[in-house]
Image (tube, rainbow, N blue to C red; front, top):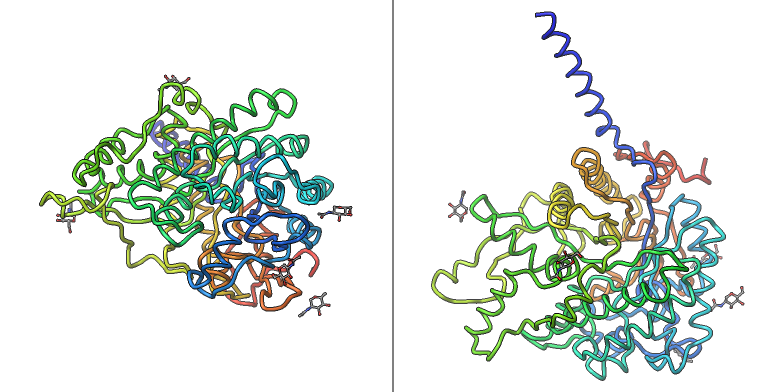
Length: 501
Ligand SMILES: *[C@@H]1O[C@H](CO)[C@@H](O)[C@H](O)[C@H]1NC(C)=O
Ligand SMILES: *[C@@H]1O[C@H](CO)[C@@H](O)[C@H](O)[C@H]1NC(C)=O
Ligand SMILES: *[C@@H]1O[C@H](CO)[C@@H](O)[C@H](O)[C@H]1NC(C)=O
Ligand SMILES: *[C@@H]1O[C@H](CO)[C@@H](O)[C@H](O)[C@H]1NC(C)=O
Ligand SMILES: *[C@@H]1O[C@H](CO)[C@@H](O)[C@H](O)[C@H]1NC(C)=O
């Protein structure tokens, strides 16, 4: 009897220790916390010096009716001029790193390396140096959707020649910034621009190349990413010793009910697997190859609309991620398209996507809050890709611009809690996390109507002044304690910013 009691007590102690380590919600030692932005969304200065026109300049200027408020990134947050102020803000809040992106056409006005803009390159050297001097690690996205318009005029991501043009551009960036930058992102969210930009008008270039454009874009993205990774291996890794990866936008796909586990798996492979399967295993997921071939045939195409990789390309692409970059915001429920039972194929995936009515809405039509989906996604990545090191390169919440942004704080609390449980309880190898975003910024097709910042930006005034939201102070406390903090419920429990104490 006594023996059982002792065992029970020991067991209880283990449980309490374990539970409270999870419940304490501290970040593991060495965990990196940062914040993120992208060039077109924050820089402004769209036509200074010799900067070339990019696809987002062209898209917003020529098709303003496709942007919710008809506006553009000509000025945005003015970060081209205010980068020192941005860096001071990031430093004062206590972030470890800042993820920003390079504007291709600012550095290469003609799109090619025949002309390198001195001012353009100097801006990124200045920003990088400013970060390093202030003890913040620069994390650089080489491409965040704003390629030169001249390259788009030649087919953009549907022209395979972009692969070498991209690598040429990346080489200029590695050379210029690589002494200070140790974490590189080649390409941000291929799904977003390949789907919304080459088979839709929600993103630049807004071409309706239905059925073909998206896969062609994705194919060339994979080649450009992989060749850039190989270039880093060949010319820079020895001396610069950094890490190179791609960033994927990952929705957590959940079965509508337990009859649809396969549907959720198919959704995952068509989204995450589309890019990650070639990068981790050499080729597109089997289900994707089978389904696109089937539906292509049904539609009367002579061959699958999904391009194939040669053995040579498989060898180049396979194994080109030093870490797994994840942008995560939301979940979707998935079930099989019932029309397929009648032999009607409405889509390559053959799926219907919906959301749970209990998930809270945000300011973005694609975005509903479901914290547990984040944990599910992280465990899926762990299982699917042999527990790679993961960097969450974006996570955040949109509203219409509220200073007392309790809902944003609550979102961060709930999502980070899921992430910490996935790390501590489930052994997911997550090493870094970035808040999207440090500032409200130009939210693509939504213009300035959806705000993701922990800082409010006055876009209606040329001063583009910044104002702290409540979430800024919450983050400052989290960063100083390296531990999640309770969600304040009213202004009486408001957290103070470091300089307000
Ligand atoms: C740059 O664009 C602004 C509009 O955003 C315009 O007023 C200005 O004249 C342009 N400057 C140059 C040098 O083209
Ligand atoms: C870079 O910094 C130098 C020195 O502070 C400054 O003169 C220059 O204008 C900056 N250039 C850019 C493009 O920000
Ligand atoms: C799942 O939902 C479908 C459609 O509503 C239904 O036909 C099926 O019986 C459900 N399965 C389970 C296990 O609840
Ligand atoms: C991809 O690389 C891994 C690890 O080197 C190797 O085991 C695998 O066979 C490769 N896959 C293909 C399709 O070449
Ligand atoms: C923006 O901030 C600056 C510096 O604090 C101030 O001088 C200016 O009046 C502000 N502009 C607006 C429109 O509030």
